[in-house]
Image (tube, rainbow, N blue to C red; front, side, top):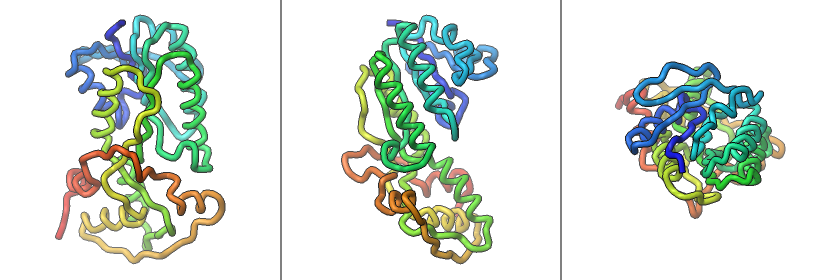
Length: 256
């Protein structure tokens, strides 16, 4: 088996933590990106467009394991299907995919695309591992910053998150990539549940600011799904060790 690992999304939020861990484990790493790049720190960068498939065969040449981290608001299902098919043709021996908790339950296009991407991995014929994770602290911070700019912080009824640190997810993914294919593994979430508005209030407090809150309803199927906690995994779940509060202190600082 080749020791080369191809990482899609290797320059993103998660990939920036994953790639150094793989290098520290002594693995040859190839990072797939749209523009490629100059090799650095023992990492090869190759150009590829997963949505069109351009450059994908060359990127997979000599690769034993693929760690698929690339994602976006649209097109994850198409990109993953292209990658999975090409990985099968290239003789890849392990395909590791990062998905999101609630992929099969939340009635939104993003989650449906994630579930379709999971199916593409499962049906590829390549031995596979899929990890579903909660929203990263980085995303929680982005949402909190936007909410904190409003004169009144909306408090969507029943909308809870269990954000997890990207470093904890990266460590788990590297462990899985270096191991044997395991199918769908236990979900990974953060150690604490928060109402979405609580994240914004924490961010404001860290900056020494305050805002009033206003309860707002979440109508329709999406609202019912979130109120039922279908974006959460509360039982039989692995939890990361880094808390939202510690992450916020690192990024923003704290004030009494």
